[in-house]
Length: 170
Image (cartoon, rainbow, N blue to C red; front, top):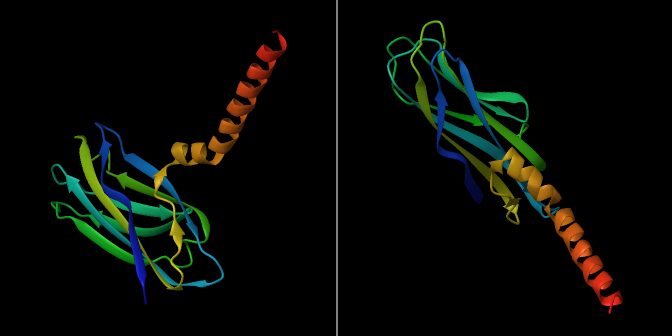
């Protein structure tokens, strides 16, 4: 079966400052396919590395379309990178999808800042034609792409109206 893999987050840096507990990043992408494509399965891979001193109560969680799909945790004196692979076939669907990576440290135990480096890879296994996947982008950029054609149309109408108005004055 053919597979198509793409990065949602590639070694993305997420920082949590002094006395804070959570930080997160969100990206959106679109999965499109036609009748001649059959999705066999979708797998999500997470690799998270925490930099800094040991910290109890620390974790990284991936939330796909509002549903927690993958979570890795660190115990006391644990600083090794963590990995997780999950089947997300029922969670990621055709159309718009939202992926949130949330990092957490216990602010009452870990006062010092922490940095996470997070990688999330989505692999789509399919039959038939290759599905079309828009590259992941921040939410604000994704929303801008939705309205960009309308903005361009408004600018074109404004330019045409201005050109027409100047032509009548001659």
